Length: 221
Image (cartoon, rainbow, N blue to C red; front, side, top):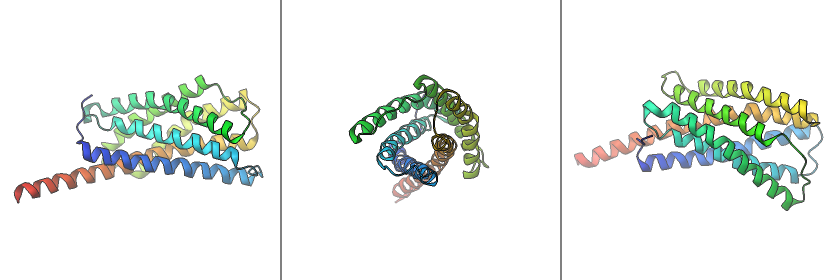
């Protein structure tokens, strides 16, 4: 899959995605802390620190993976983003899960059995493959602005997060606050990731155009 974006603008685009995805992970974790506080289960900060480490690493790896697909030629961009989403989501899940285990052990947080990693990784792979294809398609449309990206992210969150939540309810004895947190995460993250892709794409296009105009001005001078 040939790359058509020059190195410097694309590198800056990746940097933009990196800090935005880190911020996204922290915002979602903060939202879950607020939910836990409403339920009166936010007394011990250690589990939330471990969760934050997991969520930030997951967010960074998935958004960066999808962004790599945007460097493909327009004709193959949707397929590339779908493939990168398919591969990066389960890889990010495995790495983030390992980060969470390490952080939990380091903080002395007891580990509890969770959902089947194979099931979760499979659902996430399909979800972010679809999100990548949809985001690439939206980016080619003049009406594919931030609202359209947020809507497609919400659609993916409901489409794939719903079955994951039902699976969690059927196979675990998770507390209500855990289930509410899971539901919030599954809805909020795809929306946030889609918005990150849109904003980074818009900034990347502007930076590339600015570089082109600057090069043209230097050549003319």
